[in-house]
Length: 217
Image (cartoon, rainbow, N blue to C red; front, side, top):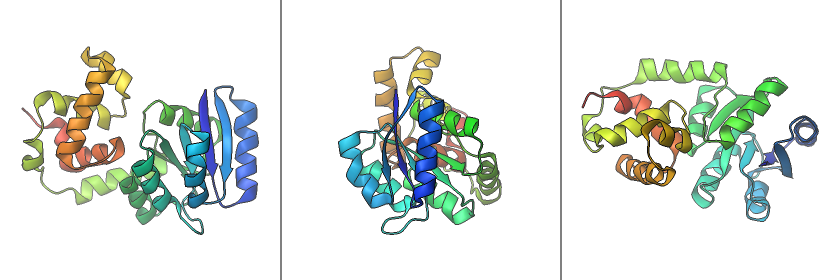
């Protein structure tokens, strides 16, 4: 069962999502509703959600600030951004804060449910409209490959980083490379430390930005 906390400043949105998700997907349990990022942070220790559905533009504490704090205080909690905002600054700020996925509110019910399931299992779902911005940013703003960073990673670590950047979960990486999940976690912890990042999303973005995941040995 995937426990979900909904964070949105609009009461109708919170209640609407609660109704939709509670009545249509047996594997999803809505454990709480928060009106802003600050309340979500207060509720997480009490409700222990697997996924937080996070809006961005909210009073008191917005979604970017809340995501950053959640990743710092509760790194096991996955954050799926669900917002109307696809402007570049919102997208990139949310990713830099550690968001595990980014979906627009005009997504249909099936896509929303699939995104929650994917987020909970370690994938990084991104709305197609947002993905276009990310790829455009990578194509037009990518500097030369950072060989200094690449040199810090062993061939095996770059192999794991490549799979992570493609959206594979730890379990899937372990299966593909014939490793235990514990070994994968240890490898990725070393990768994060060497790259100076704190989570999977930041590592994946850095891998794409600098071409770290596909450098020749």
